[in-house]
Image 1 (cartoon, rainbow, N blue to C red):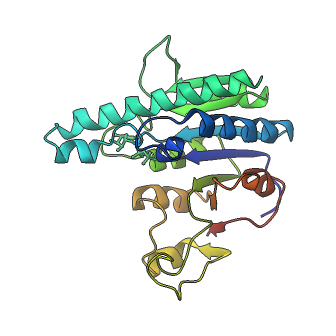
Image 2 (cartoon, protein in one colour; image 1 turned 135 degrees about the vertical axis):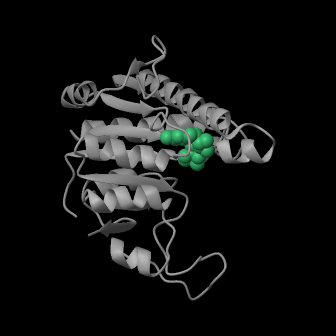
Length: 236
Ligand code: UDP
C-alpha cells in the first residue's frame, strides 16, 4: 500500500491504560498525541476512533447484572471520555481537534455528521469520532469501519499490541507466522479474528483496507504513514 492521504486510526481503550489496570495513563496519552502530531505534520488527514474498554464494556456489564443496552450506552460514554482526553492531549501539543459524538451531547462534542468531519479533515484538524456508532450491540471496531467508509478514508489503521495478523495465536503456538498481506476471504476461511465480524464485513463490502499494526512501538505509526511495510494489510 502506497502513501496515505486520509486515514481512520482506531485505538483501543485498553491501549490508553499503559501499565495501569484501569483508566487513562497520562504518559501513554502524551506519547500518542506526539506521534499523531508528527503524522499531521506530514499532511495526512486523520480521523480517530477510540474504544472504551479501559473504562467500561457493555458485555462485561451485562455479565455483572447490568441491562445490556444501558451497559452499552455506558461503554459508548466511556469512548467519549477517552476522546476528550485525547483531544485535550493533542491540543496541548498545538494540534487542532474536533470531537464529534454519535449521540447528541453538546457542548461536550458536536453531533456527528459526515460533512463536519470532512470539513475539519480538509482544514488539517484531527477529527475524533466518539460514542461508536451510537447504537448498542455494536463495537468501536464497527464504529471505525463505518466512519472510515463514510469519510472515504484510504485505509483503517487498527493500532493493537501485536505487530500484525498471525496464522495462529503467537503467544500459544510457536509455529505461528505473520502475514504481510492477506485477503478478507482468507481471513474468513482461516477463521482469523482481527475484529468482530460485523466490522470486518463492513470493510470488505465497502472495500476499505485495514492495516493491523503495533501502535505501542514508538515511531510505527509514522513509518506506516510514510509507506513502510508495517503490520498486516487486509484487502479484497
Ligand atoms: N459500544 C456500543 N456501540 C458502539 C460502540 C461501542 O454499544 O457502537 C459500547 C460497547 O458496550 C463496548 C464499549 O462501548 O463494549 C466500549 O467499546 P469497545 O469494546 O469497542 O472498546 P475497545 O475494546 O476498543 O476499548
